[in-house]
Image (cartoon, rainbow, N blue to C red; front, side):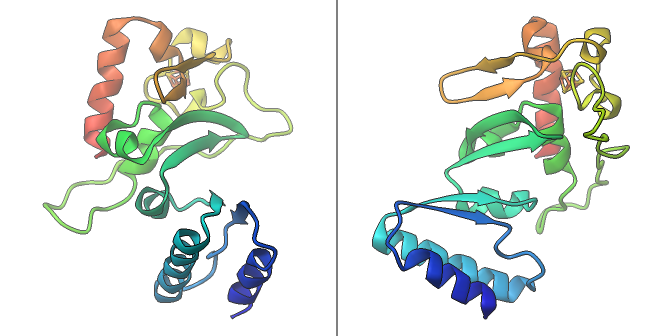
Length: 178
Ligand code: SF4
C-alpha cells in the first residue's frame, strides 16, 4: 500500500516523466502484477513516460518499449524490446536472458553467468565484464570497448569491432539465450 501511495504522490503533479527505481522490489508477484498493471493503465490515460530501473529483465521485456542494460555502472546494450527478444547482442545481456527459465516448452539446462560483479572502487581494466565473459579476447582485458550504434541499437563489446566471425559467435549465443 505504501508503494501505491508513493506512486499516487508521484503522479499528482501530472509529470511528463516518472522515474521508478525498483518500484516492486520485495513485493510478491501478485501484488507486483497489480501495481504494474495500474501504472500502465495510468500511463495510457495520462500519457506520461516511465523510466523503469530494475534487475527484473523479464518484467522489462513485458512492459518496456526500449531497454538499456547496464553492467558495473556502464551501459552495455540498448535495444527495443522486440530486438532483445529476437537476439540480444552483448554477452552479458545474453547471459541474463539465458538465466531465466521459460514457463513453457521443453526443459533446458540454464547456463547462468559465472563469477561475481567487480569491485567498483577498483574495476578491472578494459571491459568490466571480461572476467566473466566466455567470449573474452586479449584486448577485452586492456581496452574499454567503444559503443557501436546501429539504427536503433547500441552495444559496447569488442566482438562488434572484430569482423564477421566474431559477430557470428555472438549471434549463436543469442539464439541459445532465447
Ligand atoms: S568486450 Fe570482450 S569481454 Fe566484454 S563483453 Fe565483449 S567479448 Fe566479452
